[in-house]
Length: 308
Ligand code: GUN
Image (cartoon, rainbow, N blue to C red):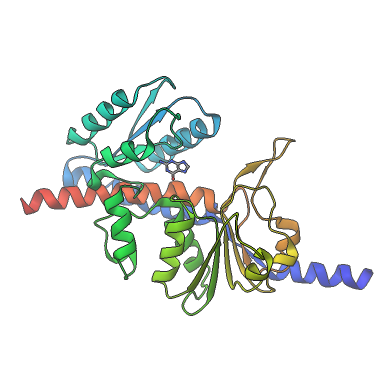
């Protein structure tokens, strides 16, 4: 028993806990320095407009955090809060006005929307060049068509959470090329785009979901395991290969109010070579990448003014 405990502690210490908080703080400090040069270079700063419909508590928190991050970096933020009863036409009208506003560089419609509003209609209404989420069908198509690194092609935004995951993995010095990546979850926001980004990095990618048969057999093959299913502590130690890189996208609230991911951190961390914590892992990177996407949209719009 004693020996087993010692081995367990040794293994635990061997795994690297990848702090998205630390990396995002560093990146945001760099962005703040860059944005400080914009008034003299461009005569203005980037402007992000966020639309929130309803008062879903998680969405309210996310939107507040986006405003705070913008403020810290020097990005102008306009948050428009609308009641849950807002009609689809009213929302589409608000989006159209932001599209037409030359001072707005990025538009984000916080999801999910109330059920009476067609989410895809709202996303399609956003001007493609202001789509900081990268959710517009044309931007999604650009991601799936593109074979090169997304950073090489800054005209279109890549969804924030997947972009943040790739940044984190690279920052940790993890080799992606040629490795087996398993993504659990097939959402438009995380599962699908992270799968394509890993493919762009020449990983061999398997996408699993709620109907996958023999999930554990597949996850145990993963050199890189990305979990985005929204099921608290679902991934247990015996589902993970020794030495795997484990990226936990889940943010769940336990009955006692504390946060946890989709990965059982206590069980999995001793087996992983690299693992992201919850909170403080992927979450802060999502907001950080939203800031980068906003700056990218701003610079693209300013450059296109010069070309005209
Ligand atoms: N809801 C949860 N994640 C996201 C996101 O990345 N963007 C938007 N717009 N809504 C979300």
